[in-house]
Image (tube, rainbow, N blue to C red; front, side):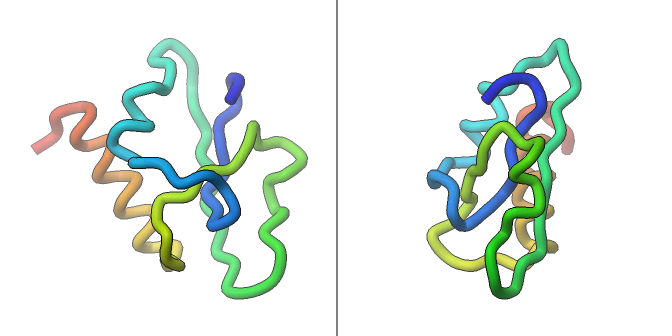
Length: 80
């Protein structure tokens, strides 16, 4: 990944999101694209995202993906 950020996709490599957010740079803004593709190719961010990552071996709704991502940042920033 460079300086734009990834897209969330079932096609990307599986990551443990709590560990992944710890590797993100803290001195530049990060954009994480979250698609809501119920079927078909999820190429919505391919032209600008640095890559794709997957949060689960299973299909997730966009709301669950958002919740898992937000929870990872809450843990990182020690938000109670």
